Image (cartoon, rainbow, N blue to C red):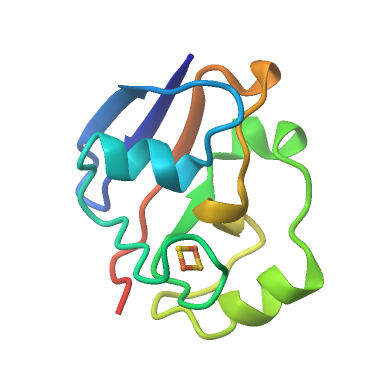
Length: 106
Ligand code: FES
């Protein structure tokens, strides 16, 4: 399956991933710039912040309360579409998912 990451300057990178991976893991494996993931996915840093593309909002579920608390600490503005990419687990229905990378992660 594929995930596309769009940088703040509009450039895109599409990477291969498998169901069960997190959107953060897929980005790190492919060296996608702008996903720092300092805490390694334990929901303790907010440097894996992404904005889910509007077209995918209905397929990515909702963020938990603790995810939202951590997003409050994110460097870039928190929006309705904000997620911690380490908490976004890929499923078959998410093949082709597109996320936007915020301006700053720290
Ligand atoms: S990697 Fe630290 S919160 Fe996602």
